[in-house]
Length: 158
Image 1: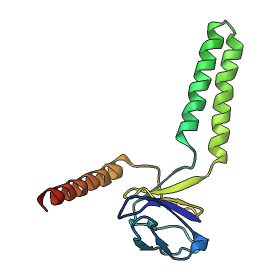
Image 2: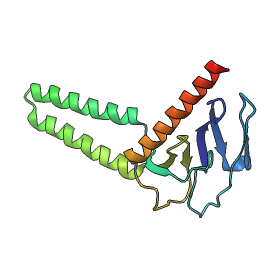
Image 3: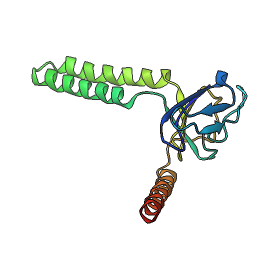
């Protein structure tokens, strides 16, 4: 079990592993964070970094690699189709779809916090964690923008 997150004070990337104990200290600003340990067989109910209960799940796969696979397959399809190798072109397109399906089945999920974007790996699945919901994500984005605006106003006035 591990968690990747940004420090809540200085926004420096942080990493916590279950063997590291229940405390994490930021190497940049010395901010201390007490993490609630969750037993291995229990599902995660709240973010370990900020305590928010709004979490979503997504595939633990690099989006850039997926896009490169898609673009490569489309380009290979177009080139072979242009060269009148229609069977090969369709074979490339269907083969890339099969590879994509196999990757989808093989890759596990990661649970992400809407508020602080902490990524939780290795926890028992929780059926309450649904895929990303745009309404919830927008609510937390607006909250973050309000908080940043207030901080900027305080800096200007103080």
